Image (tube, rainbow, N blue to C red; front, side, top):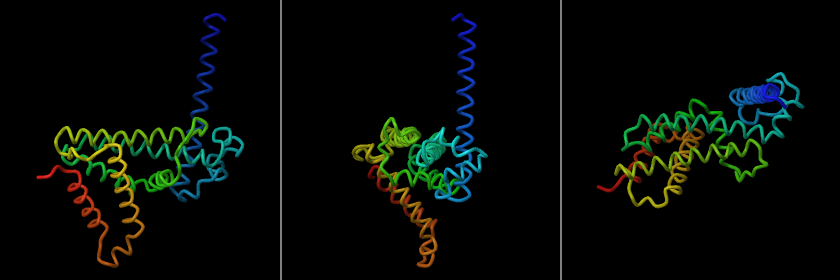
Length: 221
């Protein structure tokens, strides 16, 4: 094969790959729109196909089943959250970095509730993805990126002397802080009416939680 023929072949292959990525993105966009409007349970292969104006068969060319399609939303949500955390960290003072990340997570849940729901569903299942799990593998990788960002923020805080040195394993600490904040958001949102009925406002609950967080991870003295 001469050089021109090889270049043409590569160009054709690249166009096909670009077209495949474009079409896949359109399908995920349709799933994203349905999740925003109808909630997680509203994202079905049939619904996505109708929204994207594609056949079910074509959707199945890109996503093997509904779980694979959902995983693409998990990945998109994790990418959004990771960027928000990076932005929050870049703007945060060292002594309030973890609190800043926590508040960024709360804003994420308020501004993108369908993404928060997607991540909640992802957290609620066994995410031990294998190489055959399609989009779930990418979603798990993005989740790992977010976790590593939290670990790095904790380590930077220790180096700056604003996070206590005896936190133990920082990987476990990051997961514990994640669970604390995630559960706080869920309870303060789902039980908001009940909390108000017993005289506990959501904002007051969040501030109390951040006070506890500061006291937990800050060095004594």
